[in-house]
Image (cartoon, rainbow over all chains, first blue to last red; front, side):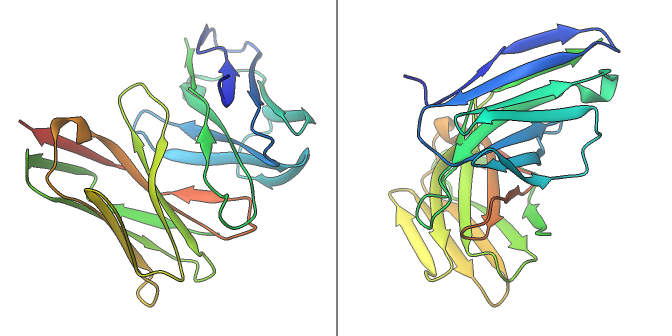
Amino acid sequence: DTAVSQTPKYLVTQMGNDKSIKCEQNLGHDTMYWYKQDSKKFLKIMFSYNNKELIINETVPNRFSPKSPDKAHLNLHINSLELGDSAVYFCASSQVPPGNEKLFFGSGTQLSVL
Amino acid sequence: GENVEQHPSTLSVQEGDSAVIKCTYSDSASNYFPWYKQELGKRPQLIIDIRSNVGEKKDQRIAVTLNKTAKHFSLHITETQPEDSAVYFCAASIAFGNDMRFGAGTRLTVKP
């Protein structure tokens, strides 16, 4: 009964490949996010979706394309992987109204691009 | 957009001492300020949060203070224990916003 689950946990791939990370939340939250955590542990927001609609798209290369088939799922597809894409990617969800902004994070996907 | 700065980047204390981590934010519209703890190899987890209508909040050994005028908030951990060792992140967001901005993190080490 994991609240926010993402798969895979580890992803090792070659430069130039295309890969996807899946995320699902069973909390009934309206908002889902993707965060990237680099080797220095900095947590940077990439995307934010509210009820399947894109709200925030930070300066992320267009090789990264989020897809939200419904409000419980937010997947991340990455084309033409580069060495600099190596990081831990966290999915998260929250309910927006005041009192519910707490972020629930998934367990992370460690992506290593060789 | 919001910019959150966090200091120090690393902090080492003796068990039993207090630890203080400070953050500043840039957007005066921000009104929700959570703190997350991330243990090695784990996900960030909320430990305490504060809203802009409150100046201080305490939960056992941890407390957070907020100075809206100075756009500054701090995490205080008293009687530190080795299990407090982790990376701590401050964050700021606007209610009804879909955006949570994090500080760069503080690696706290508590030496037994």
